[in-house]
Length: 358
Image (tube, rainbow, N blue to C red; front, side, top):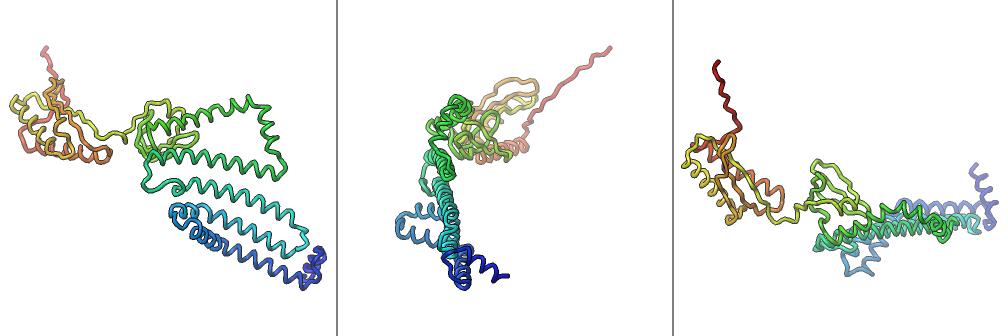
């Protein structure tokens, strides 16, 4: 049966003279394909290594970017090349050359676009470890646009290979220009809003913000949307137009956080005890290193419904929300310890009901 297959192959390929020659060509062609299939990754890594050491030997970030972005696309392109080489060996007269050559062209376009998209998306392409957050945000946004442009260009080239003229496609789009304009209106508005966000910088990637009742960390600013990782772990996606027009509180931009707290004492407390409590409160705040001592304001504010209300305003010089909460927690614990060890009584909401006799 195998001999029959060889004979039919030999007869179908005009330049092969015997079944023995056909067998040798099959073995060599399959060997090339198997080697490429098994070692395509290692071969691609070696080629990238040689390129980095000869062309980018003084640019470490460039070497990292090329290694991350080129190795995988190159490995698949090498496999397609191996298929082409195998078919050239098996059928040297070119009976199946055209379809394989067509596949190689498509592979070259796709892998080149793949490489370009991965390269531009690599953090090592334009960014360095000491890059500012503003630069990182701008570069990431622009890279998203560039990657989209590369993908569109690659699609047009692929369509060209199948006989669809790019100029005719654009002409067809021109005929329906009004419809396309309306369809793309939101996308264009979101992209322009993205540029406004990038260059006006109300917030940046990794900033902790609050918008429309959602608090979280900005994970990415894309062409159309801004993605926020909320405190509950969910990802919230906002159109850039909404983010550009919304009232955004950027907690990362602040250098400190102010606190206005009210402490209620029972009405049984004397004026001396009230003064004793305010002095102790001032001492606790003054002895807290993170509190701005010059900004402490403590006053007996009012006679509340259930308590003598003492207001304390102070500034904690911590921008990080977790550190701020930790400092505030320690202050409250020290106040609680003081109250427990003294004759000061904290009030809670109470109502005294007088029942009249019949």
